Length: 296
Image 1 (cartoon, rainbow, N blue to C red):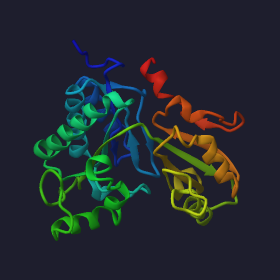
Image 2 (cartoon, rainbow, N blue to C red):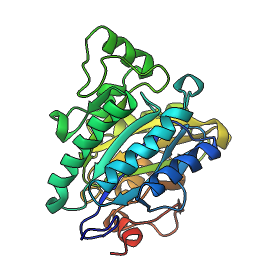
Image 3 (cartoon, one colour):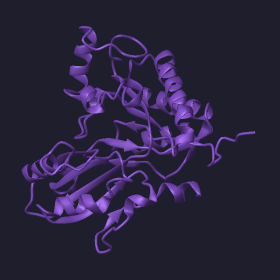
Image 4 (cartoon, rainbow, N blue to C red):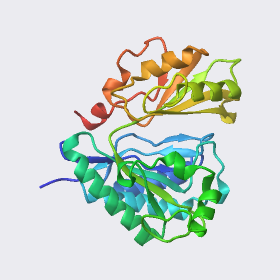
């Protein structure tokens, strides 16, 4: 019999919510995930006040995972009003994105099925418009759907320019919409630039190193930001969609071709191989691997 958490069969999910400042709200969401049977793989979500965003990493067996995601999403919809949030990270919903993650090809089918179940239930039980992305939507990207933010998404839905895959053809009045996908592990990773590099330099570097840029790294998405809660430090924030192809050390080297990297941080968990060749002298806050968290 499959238990709620069994590493050889477990699926992961990495729900992101648009709240990075209210600890009580984040504790309530985490408790809902756990109460419904999922295991939280990090002691606390990765929360950031500038991004105004928190990232949870949970694991459970199929079916148990969808129950947990619905429970946590329900608390988020109840407590997070998009009108009160204006963080730097692109977003379109209180529960912004819900990826179901498979660790190997044998679990890909189960992850896709679970993601579709989650999408249907988010729409049916929480009255959210759900937009699929990635492999479940012919390769459509999160960036395409987030462009212009919640107001632009609401306009596109209202005019019929964009149709949800599940749920109402209108944005939720306080929670917006939600993106759902199924994917292998990716790595969310932030690099803080040493002064005097500022926002303009961070944006320039992000444009150069992202996939499609002049120095583009494959399957790397990047944006440049300035962190008011960190004294105005400039940050290059990246998603590495194929961390077995592009190690984090390669991203550090690419950025340091233009500005000194003062420190870095991992958001969530990363495959152990993502740290191959890591420069030992460089700090990486919250460094932790999927394999260690799963006991593999």
